[in-house]
Amino acid sequence: MKSIRKKRFIKPLVLAGLLIVPLYFGFSTKTPEGTSYMSPAATVTNLEFLYDLTYTKDEELVHEHSIFSEQLKMIENAERFIVADLFLYNDYYNTETFYFPNSTQLLTDAFITQKKKYPDLKVYLITDEINNSYGPVLNNQLLQLKENDIEVIITDSSKIRDSNPLYAGFYRTYIQHFKTPEIGWMNNPFGDNGPEVGIRNYLKLLNFKANHRKVLITENEGMVSSSNPHDASSHHSNIAFQFSGEAVSYLLEAEKAIAKFSGVEIQDVAYESTSSKVLSETTLHVLTEDKILNELLKHIKNTKDGDRIDLGMFYLSHREVIEELIAASERNVSIRVILDPNKDAFGFKKNGIPNRQVANELLEESNGNIELRWYLTNGEQFHAKIIAIHTQEQTIIIGGSANFTRRNLDNYNMEADIMIIAKSNNKIVLEVLAYFDRIWNNEQGVYTGDYSIYEEDSSWKSLIYKVQEKTGFSTF
Image 1: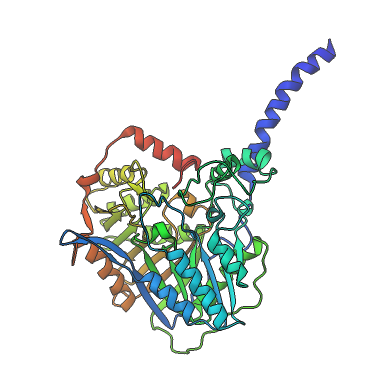
Image 2: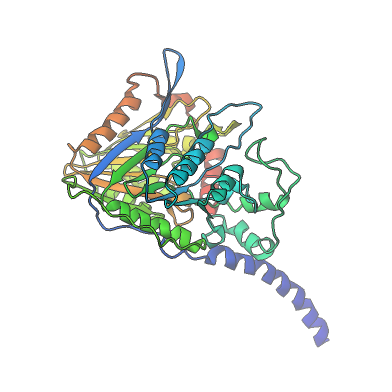
């Protein structure tokens, strides 16, 4: 009888173990060493605000872009080292339907040309495994770099925390031990010109994690942006900050941390500022991962009656950020929000989640101090990630790679932003303000439209957004 009773308990215990072990692995992964970083307040000797805009003027589509050309110039001026950390670095898209500039190949050619010109030039490219379609074989451009003595570092996603823990724990426990084959038999999820993949590529994709940074550093300067050198992203509207001075050394240290946990020690490059003339009343912090959230919430909470906030964002869904924006509006803080309508993604149509649901909440729950406009995209995306908080004493600008979502701000994705603190009459502040005024007021073109254009009040979609945000089972 005792043996029969024992047998009855064995099956439930085994089943419980099969469920509990994945949960443990899904929720227990720690943040890699050197990430979740906030630098000391640093000086800068030069600081430029750059942006890309796609818009209509006289019923014609205009691409007014400057970030990519500045990246090419940075590479062309490098003689000692280049360290780049770029999320999307591939030319995959549906070529039968669309045509995009060959941005990835142009950047690849620039790296290779400069390496040949200066053979002692140290070049490191850190990137995400999405560019290999989550398989073991480097894509064509990455192979070209490697063949020309350029170090390609694929971020080790197994070291990154799991934003989708219910699935990722199952993946870590039962799937990751099996190798992904080099040759597949299924259509590539990112474009008809991508290599065929197998089921394990798709299973790895569903972890929904990434090194999402967009950073470029040379011995001369650094750049933090929202822009990817990716063919299908070539027409997106983006922002970037280009700077020199001691702040660049902190940015470089943050990038060395990514390389280190991915198996490569970058020890042969260091940044030294060559100018002693620093910008007055201007400081810069490098922020990564959840340090972006900490500073963002702190400065929104510190706003008071008469202050202003300008926000331009591709994805806005983080619950704490939304709640603090609403609370600020109740303190009579004036807030302008410009959002992507979340309708386009590289040729695929999207359902408006999460921005349309968040927009509805912001306008319904605030006391009228929040105004909202949609960026009127034409197949591309309003891919900016920037906020400017204007107080009576100073302006705080935070911008870079991070969308304001749980995945981007809660120590899951690898993200890189900078925070600028400056007087309100500072050149960089005036440039950022002019950018917001231009697209808000449709100066020199048509950029944004009224909230009513994509107004959506769906309780069902709002529930879906909140469940996806909480669980991480989403692409935002």
